Image (tube, rainbow, N blue to C red; front, side, top):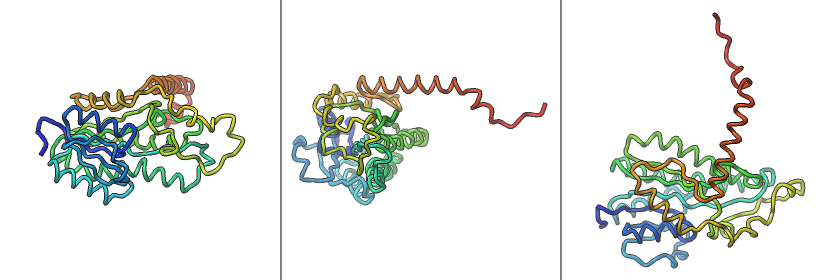
Length: 280
């Protein structure tokens, strides 16, 4: 059983990338971890530690999410931190993306976290404590050409998290969105990003088809430092709802806020012209 002054983490997409680094950071802090991996054979690179258990978890399957949470409870007796990290990217124009690709990415990036949240929340509510951390993206706050459908999946997580934070705060449960920029993980490799089903030359001028390949391996963000920051966020009494990570993410957020503010003011009179006339 876990020492009661330490935390129990439940992490999805834990076999590589940021998920793996969060596992390492939590264990190094003396906490316990339930690492959810879709393919159990790919968990061999995770640390060997008595306070780590690995569970098979395809987040698109509600039954697997429920079973993984039950395993965590049977082993550690509680869950303190839920990290919804499992997900993948999709590069291509909105028109180029097939209906099947849209369904698949939403099944993983949106329905997956919801499956885990539904499985874990009854426990967190019973404990009157817990912290749900949903891994979004800089593209979840401001979309760019070529990332529309992927961005939409992360926009959905942002909306869900905003509402969830308000719904569970009175239960003693915290919610945080992590919005990473470009970090040096395998996310931009062929393992974690797909290409839209079609390519139309009309979009070549606004979409760099090779940008994932070009950026892979040279991203500015250090995933170990990102994991350390997430570990720090979990220790805060009043954590933020949103936390962009990386210089590029902070810039993207600032640029969008400025754009929205300017556009709001430019069309303010039009926006305010829609009320019924008031009888004097």
